[in-house]
Length: 540
Ligand code: DGJ
Image 1 (cartoon, rainbow, N blue to C red):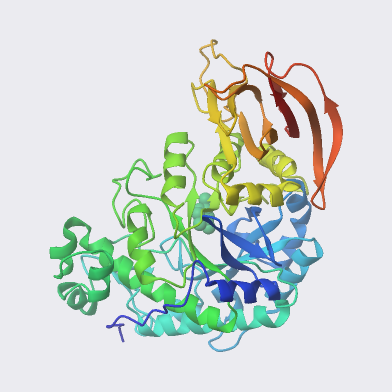
Image 2 (image 1 turned 45 degrees about the vertical axis):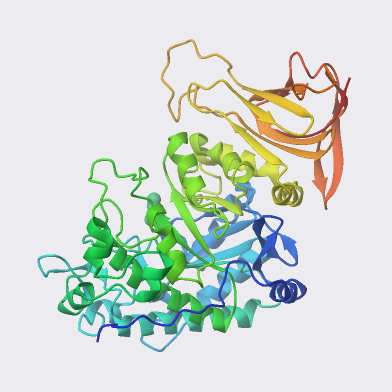
């Protein structure tokens, strides 16, 4: 049977909890999202938590493989790990659940001092259905597939399948009940991803007779109102986007049902991730950028966020998977997914040098709650694959300062300067100070191409946070900072009073080295190994 009507959506779910609700959550230490200043932050055990994490490869969601990767998690300096939980694994036979692997992995991560972010590989995985149990794959009558335009079934389950929804919802609910049972005192699990890169790859929508009937009917009132449209059929209201919006509506409604039921069992914050596409964010350049062709139709791509926000209120965060190396595209995506109703969480991204710099944009310019390179357990042995070295250095430099960084984010006192191709420097403007950030090497005259692996890969990246009128926290690599009093102020110069390299230990600043010398001419140099600095300055 196919799903014909919109399933009721909870008005409770979501993003910013009411103050009373948030207080109750804080008191229990339960992970939740909370408004702090203008921002929404992730709160774990009563404190803001910024995820500097990593996602393991798709085949790693088994206890022994996860355990083998522990040294790599450590080498990455991660504080949380995203890993898959496969539906086929926990419910190989309908109604018979096996959570032994789930337990071992959570306990294992806990023993390593890491937080867990399980990814529910349910009805959708990368716009297909590969991780559903065999009893779902084989029963095409009960669990209908999407039919393409020619009426052929494809490797994707239909978002209109009522029995599929019921089965997925049941499995996910059992999983959440189980996590509550084994983890509600420890809060090792801090977030849940519902499905993976959901959507329909291979067709813009399901063309089954039941789906056609819905498609030829009116757009549900609720959506018309939420998107401020005039009533009408899908075609009349959305024109060339009709198929995609139609799929998005039923898909997001379905996924919201799964998330809502899961939250009723154990109310962890829930998010979905996104296979990019549309509005200049396509990453399959050899295909037309079209729903169902170059990206899964109906997923929460940037141009679909408003629809998802209207129809999936129990999804707290929509987080992009970003594999673009272009700073322009990367930053555009960050800006699309950083909204008052959607804190930015970079769920997946590349691990290499070209990507390491974008972590600074995410945290410093878009106040991200987290940043996770994908496939960080790659390679044989215990060592982190060399491709992740710069990301590991980022996390090393930033990790002791995360509570301060979260505080600076909430106060709007944090900024980033990131090296981009052919841009040798950036200006940052703070209260009382203008700061010029120059990157290394400052001038590119060799004519050599910029490549991900070549020596000239742009690697300059800096976070600057203003701690007080004349005090800054600086974290970064491959750059030099020069300070001047704000243009037009009564001062003409700046000199250093106390420039300390150091780390935070349990929130207390511990200097490890005292720098001196002029901080204006040569600038405050941040070398390739990366450094955390506290600088007290004097304007004169
Ligand atoms: C994005 C998916 O979400 C991941 O599960 C994984 O398949 C990566 N792509 C591989 O690049």
